[in-house]
Amino acid sequence: MDPAVTYGSYLRVDDLLELQQPRSDGPEHDEMLFIVIHQVYELWFKEILHEIDRVQSLLDADEVHRAQHTLKRILTILKVLVAQLDILETMTPLEFLTFRERLEAASGFQSDQFRQLEFALGRKAEQTMDRFAMDTRARTALQRRYTAPTLWDAFLRYLSREGYPVPERGLARDVSAAIEPSAEIQQILIDVYRKDPKNSEICERLVDLDEGLQEWRYRHVKMVERTIGVKIGTGGSSGAGYLRGTLSSPLFPDLWEIRARL
Image (cartoon, rainbow, N blue to C red):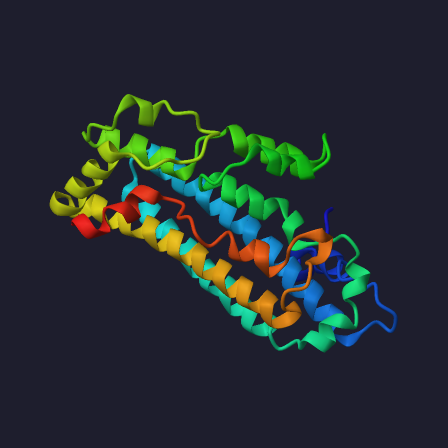
């Protein structure tokens, strides 16, 4: 007879608590915080990917209200991600330096799940996959996301089924390519906002998602600047300089282009 399921066995708490392994001598007090925060981030990235897949399947099923509900959950998670940076910022630059060298080439730049999130939302770059070895879980997952339709593609298909004249090149575009602004789609979106309250709401939730991710990026940049200034980042990245360069382009450009025309 199998043993009864307990809180600990269901959540595999013993396994979970073994995953925090500081590398510094002592170990240094603040390395535990650093590890826990970043492991929690990876768990939230996993959940956001799970929810984005859900939004796409709900849009494909024309269940727009449930899709909006799921987007609201994602937005709430993004607020938690931002709040976690407040915790990380309690660690001073000197405290970070006590163990930073132990990170060696490790860097958040190497988070495949965050790259998957970018891919799922339309920010795809084939060279991103080159940072991950062939036949690994990370490379396989990224390859799948790279060739899969994005959330924006699911939204355009939904609008087409709602009777909007989405151009064929929008519906049959290369899903591995970056999302480019489209004058035709912008006119459709203007019509949605002016005449279709139900679908203008889903547009606004996508804008919220775009803005929420940009907020997290901005706070992440400021946290890195506060902690290491202009130093080269771990893993050889340009640190805050690289991160600052990610702030300039929206995920869903058409939804931003129309703001002055509504």
